[in-house]
Length: 254
Ligand SMILES: Nc1ncnc2c1ncn2[C@@H]1O[C@H](COP(=O)(O)OP(=O)(O)OP(=O)(O)O)[C@@H](O)[C@H]1O
Image (cartoon, rainbow, N blue to C red; front, side, top):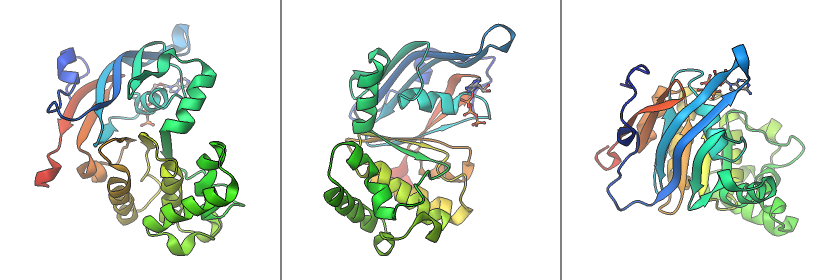
């Protein structure tokens, strides 16, 4: 169980040592972030130290308001931290200017959200092709590659469907294809199963493990859903803006 927030563990306890073989994909040190000021001031991140390893799925869990989404947003370069370091495969995004960060984010990071955020007038393949078009690909090869990714995740018969013709689980598959199409080094997911029924949520987590966990890529998932904890290699428990415990799952024995 997570430690009590009144008894924060020693810094070393919050940093997984790993077995020395896995590369650190995301190195987070002394990360702080607050919102508001005066009476309204909220310390959302109170000094996060965490290593996220390549080749693993790391889950970030904890009670509502503990800072999970804030942490994910800073790691994804969507939100600026107050202080601290976030190095993604060696590049410290907290030191980048806005334009460099936007470029870095488009090239290196894929996103999956609770709401699928698909464009309603575009087909599955066109939606999934968006990161490639943003990266400068012309439409035909981008849609072709997106269709191949969709086919690889069981959506081959749905490449020409509009979002309104898809179930929630199918829309989330399209969102996963869109997140993976440009082969990002880091995949971040915010509550990817929250809008899905239990069975579909498990299928989406299995799909994320199969398609996204690779030796040279890291996957980070914020979730409330304790039914999907079994899919994580590492579970970082947060409370009150801190990482209070890291659980390691031996998936080889699972
Ligand atoms: N834009 C904002 N303005 C003001 N306060 C904010 C903002 N975003 C988050 N907070 C506050 O920061 C704290 C951490 O919020 P955050 O959304 O990161 O928590 P969470 O663990 O993701 O919560 P949940 O599980 O409910 O989504 C909370 O107290 C929240 O009210």
